[in-house]
Length: 155
Image (cartoon, rainbow, N blue to C red; front, side, top):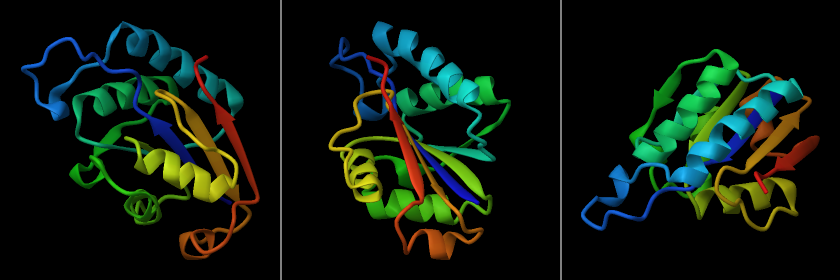
């Protein structure tokens, strides 16, 4: 089985205009939502073998909550910052593990979730979408529709 979890970073703090976009931290809502969504994914039983995250602070912090809940390390990848859907999926396929989580940004996350599900129109902050294929090969999985998918959001 091949699995993919897409997590859009939790809500960031827009309060400090002097910060570069890459350096924006999570806001209070993001700090509240990230551990809740991480626990929901853990409790769902969906298996994750690796977590890939954008290098942006808000994505790294979100990923850290999921890593703590799942007992995994976070692998930061600069190419995930602002990445389009195709690059997000390619990073997952190149991860070398059967089931991977990608924590990144919109619009790439919403586009990819929509392409894979045929239904998800938007990934709000800290939304979690899971996709599974009944094959053990990322090359096959990336070429066909998933066999199942789920969607969860903090609100």
